[in-house]
Image (cartoon, rainbow, N blue to C red; front, side, top):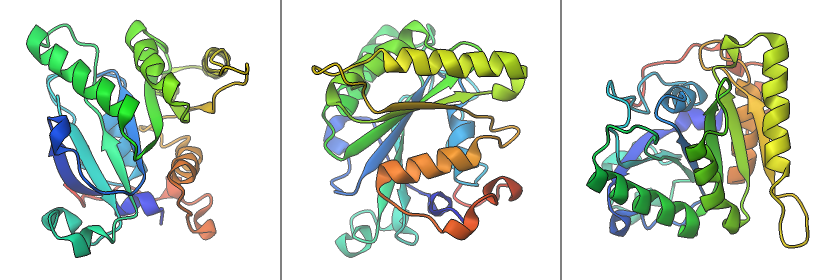
Length: 239
């Protein structure tokens, strides 16, 4: 069983002042509203309804926190003794890219997202969710470039890879790695950016993503799980 399967809802944030005061590492998931972000989180955590997918894309404008460790910690958010049991946080950022979002809400959204990913000390890495058929849209690049100055790792999940043939999928992955390698630091060294193909529907790329996310969080998983993650259907816990 992956440590990610322990994920439970912790809190929802709509203002920077309400960000949790926990000190554990956080990894944030960002992506376009139709890129499959909620599906990716749910399948990685082996839960059907952990991350909420709105029927109207672009409407979910909050930052949602899920805790790893700390039994039923969502019911004890203000209990210091309980929150100390938490080992890490998964952070579901608002999806972006829909023109239907009102201007004022979009401005608030951008400020919340931009400030969080650029200045949140506990944030250790970003998982950028992109549709493998349409990677690196203008807004994907904007999100990436907001995050680049932090120097922290990015792992790109190229979702819906099952919609592509083998050659097209290979080319999409090659393109992603080429684009990511073009980002270099002041010394000309590439940033720690990685990419992989992923399909929530087919549960492909699951083991690779699981291992990378746990590595970025500084957690270890049970090595006996190798090769088993794709064999277990998601349950209904955590909704």
